[in-house]
Image (cartoon, rainbow, N blue to C red; front, side, top):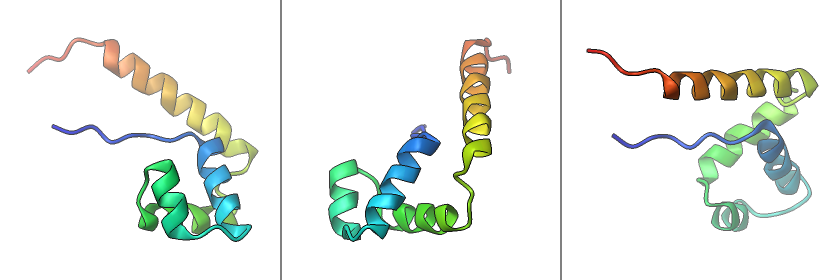
Amino acid sequence: MARHRSHSIEFKRQVAQEFIAGETLHGLAARHGVSRNLIRVWVMKFEAGAFDEGAEAADLLQEYEAKIAARRPRTR
């Protein structure tokens, strides 16, 4: 099963800011290896304030939880 990549809040904020500064969706998607639709979502979230400082703490918490979950043995 394919795993989804997760990107940091800082990376999402950077890509959104590059788009707002005038970069094209196609250029950003090719350079960063993400879909144009995903960039659109990030820009909407950025403009709504979802990537503010509080979001960075939530991102860090999510990263720690993923590391903990990866260490736990899977039982069926």
